[in-house]
Length: 99
Image (tube, rainbow, N blue to C red; front, side, top):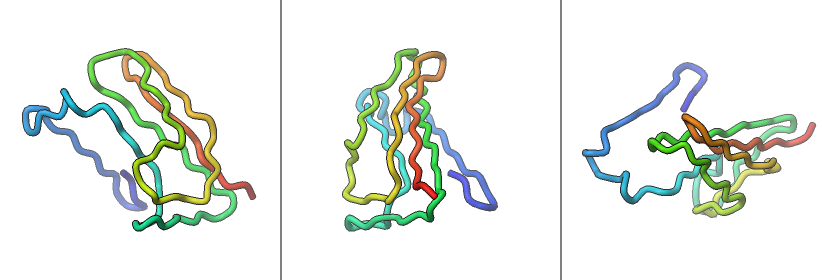
């Protein structure tokens, strides 16, 4: 995550909570603050989201468009989702609001 002043990241060993055998889904976006609210962006806004998968495999993850786990939304139009395989498989998509 980045802010105007700082960039933050975190990693941890699987031996702490042993999620590797069970965690098979990831979701990221910029949404409203809760309770089904919507984040409203200005015209001309464009966001690109990329989720990298580091699980020791080279198989492309699956894009599950419009399959979120929250009722929160934003006012951006969702572009195509692309899944890539390789050393660091990933999912990426762009959202935008025209000018």
